[in-house]
Image (tube, rainbow, N blue to C red; front, side, top):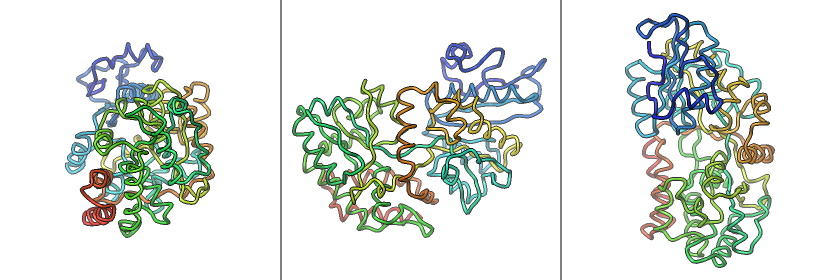
Length: 436
């Protein structure tokens, strides 16, 4: 029996976990071998858990799973961390062969597809308890009234603002409860004019999936609905026209810079290096940008069409999910493991806000004292905007998992002058509709 992480990364050692205070002796790295067990023996029960993410996520997840294993009698947990690239192909192959892991970290892009394939256990039927969740935090994992995926951390779209860049331009931060998209562009253009050459007021929004989905909701539609694509070409055209207007006004960088920015590592992006004052991202990225900028960035609401925060339609969403596989070895045990990860204060103190703000209010209270300043900003932003949220958006349907990539490509075509906003709007609708 192997009692360690199958994909251990150099440096992810028990010594390092101990130094971080994430696990107490005498537990093994990822699994409880139990007294007298050897690597060649079968365990009484086992669980395979897979996730993608960075080293911090792996260390914290490992430590939390280790605590759960220690509470069981003879349980072995095998963790299989991986990278985003290749993660979904591997999972699809295992599901097709009916040899899936037991617990999987799931992305919204693929959730409905796996539900419709019958690959996920119905957590409502398994009696999963979401009674401690914030209002609306559990519904983001429901399909036809049944829970299939558990919110691993709540996030929301934000406009990040770098106060140091505003100060350099001699300008004040905007009132995010009243600004419109046009006012954001005008502010971006003014910032660009007052900043040193090569710096800009606003990062291009055309490739930001979060920005587009908010734009669609404010237009009275949804990105997806029960019939497939929920918006028409006019809505998409208006969004691309907004991005073109921003670039032509000097509010956003040149097409070449914006294209490079989308694919750059987070710490090398224009906002991270202080070359833009404003950028649209997700609330859980605040720590990364605080670290990269060396500043305490501010989290602002996205603009609205009407200039009213109550009409901004900034739906809270899950950063990712935990799901139980229907063909796993022991679905009830898997349910208990996921319950521990999202509902147990001890697990919350270990994992913190790395996957987003905990949806369980008791867990959130338990970690209050250990929150970093960056964590607190994310928590406070979600609390401040809670009453302004629209209903959870419909899930991405099967065949549309590439939506963000397609959106980025058409946006880049507009910025580069290869397509008009109208051509890009129709092209986006046709391309996504054709895959559904």
